[in-house]
Amino acid sequence: MQNLLEPTSRAFPLSHDMSPTDVVKRQTWITNASLFWNNRHLILRVAGAAFALSMVVAFILPKEYESGARLMPPEQGGGNGAAMLAALVGKSSASGLAGLAGSLIGAKNNSALFVALLHSGTISGHLIDKFDLQRVYHTRYRDSTAKRLARLTKITEDPKNGVITIVVTDEDRNRAKELAQAYLDELNGLVARVNTSSAHREREFIEQRLNTVQAELQRAQLELSDFSSKNTTIDLKEQTKATVDAGAKLEGQLIAGESELSSLRQIYGDQNVRVRAAEARDAILRRELQRANEQSIQGTEGQNLDETHPYPGLRELPRLGVQWANLYRTVRIHETVFDLLSEEYETARIDEAKSIPTVGIIDFPNLPERKSGPHRLLIVLISTVLSIILTAIYLLAKRSWRELDAFDPRRELATQIRSTITGKWGRGRN
Image 1 (cartoon, rainbow, N blue to C red):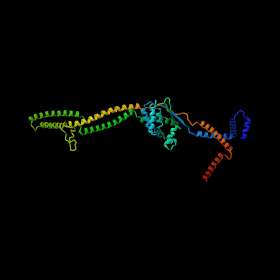
Image 2: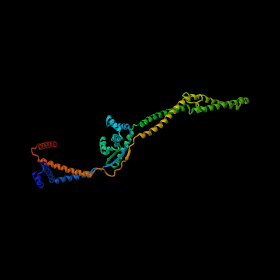
Image 3: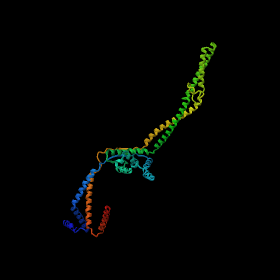
Image 4: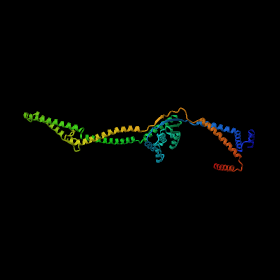
């Protein structure tokens, strides 16, 4: 060391005004500089090897592309925001979610809430399934894929205006754009699913009531249809009117026929052809009148035996009319309720659509034109500089080791550790 210091001392004479500390610092700096200069070839070789290796690694690394979107969440009441946040995948305790939701109630907007939704496991799980990211990222477990996706996705919030920025990094520029767009679509879908507004609850209630009324209406219509088919009743009011008119007409024809028959008997006698024809015509009219006024002849199992007159008689109409009126009234009630609920259901759906917060897209995801990484020049420069620094550290450590006394405790400890490791390594190989 004295030989190294002597030339430099002559080249840079020490001032008598310098303190001993300054003298030591200057001698140390000069000694280190001389050491590095004397080993400049080693430093250059290591730097060159690191430069070549870093160049190879930098060009082997795949290109990365970034696609981003900016969105502005709508302002919304705190109750809905707290409910949506509580509907997230349970990664926190209920008290933690309640505390976070409570802090958002007085906020100007719901940016923090929407950032939490974007980081939720529900959205990441859908993206993993949609793009088959386990295969793309070459991961074995689903949670590893979710962590990799979270590292490649940057979601930030501007505290001043609440604008949320989503930036997705991927090796495929098209997939980067599609992933960014999928984040927006999944966010809108998740907000719609966990919506708990009053309009949503009203729509659900009306929908359930509408399904119940529809089932009751179908059952009432089926009962009325079966009753009408069994008793041949279509419209009892019109049927009664038609039956009365038909009976009056038949009775009038029968009276006129009987008068004509009486006249023919007095003139021609009972065996005359015209008299017999009149008698047959009157018998037919009397039978038709009886059918119109009385109950039709029924079989043992209730089937109508008179196929020429399937409609109910006049005496049966009052009894059938009560049952038919009850069934018809039930059908009309259910129809009225169903129509009213249908109108309210459509109104509730419109109100629900208005109440669902829709994310406002400021900038849609674009197809990246240039790669965002890796920065090959930066990789090469950092690797080269780091190799020079490590080589300098190695030279300083080597010089310090040689300057240690043979009986120095630090040297003895290092020698003992090296001997132990070497011995175990040799026994392990044997």
